[in-house]
Length: 556
Image (cartoon, rainbow, N blue to C red; front, side, top):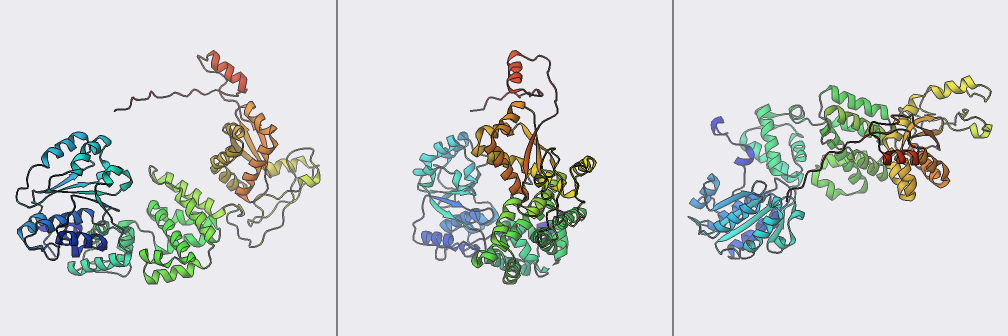
């Protein structure tokens, strides 16, 4: 190994110096080698693909091959003065431009003037525009003519991770190469080679976790490996990898998926609590859980070729065994629900709440018993309870009790002649009803959007409503406007659609009852005529002043 004072990062020391050393991009390197060997190099290339897959490295190697004193079948020799200058970073005819920092039209105008200067020492000059998609529209327009008719001694290479942001006029003037992610098996073999040369040993499974965490990027994998070496020294262990990288233990992923399969919400929430107490990274846990569910789906559908890209043969066998007991539709629903949790911009406490709610939502799902946890395999007998509304017949009062079958003892039936019992039943919500209420409130926005597609006016009215509480089989909606409340109450088709949506969320027939929300502030100082008329027209029960920040004029 190198001395500590001379030691550079692994991804710098293991940067490929010849086309033959580039990992996993043979369709690109072979084409470029043949172009150099036959002297048919284009004036502009566009290299696009995920980060860390070799875009700028291939551009540097192309510069070496174009100016190499002793090329070998279109590849650089790596030993001549031109190759050594590039490796040492002192090749003045190789100009690398960060388009993210030099994205304006003035930078491109300066570039247009400099490209006509002849090379200093090399035969051909090269300009590499990294993250080229960051250029502004005026900059692209200014660059277009130069890119179309450059000097004969210049080659342009544009590298980007977001090719969809590159204008079509630019794409048509470049030879485009799409670089793909590196397969897990190839990346693991490369990491083994690196560790062998560095004199470092690794426990089984460590390199596979590092490669999977890099998502097919060589640079990210080498940077992660460098971090582990700095922590663990000459021997890398799984325990050290979990500590340094915040990786989710395999048993935690297995417990989470088993809890979701059993629809055991309590076990899923207990697992999240245990991970938090152990200091685990919930963002990483969420990513790992979604990836594991996706792997189960691929295994269940028999997509072995796709699965082999990210998992070893042994891991594929385990996934195939676990996936046999899953339904594909159930896995799709779980992946969609958990992927909706956006960890960006949330602190640890907020992320925990949203993750717990997503797991609860995924475990209980439509059609699942809303208990904590549902343990009965067969559907329980409905428990007859008296409805809270007065004047109903006994047949109308016999409705399934929310949460029946969750393991709690069902209360004894009450009669219409027992108002005290009725009051006690409605005023003491069960744990299951509290969970069901939380689910309805969480999905209220989605429910309103679906209703608005069928009944636009009713959708507008529901914006003034909130899910207040659950009374037996009735969902009480609190309206801040009598006008909007009347709109929903008078439209039977709309009410039926709302009740259907609510029932689908909990897997049980529900009814809707509308109430007025508690009045807030009736008036505010400075109330004008227009506001007064709006309050009277919509029979609003409160007024809230909303201050709007002035809109800044957009810079041109």
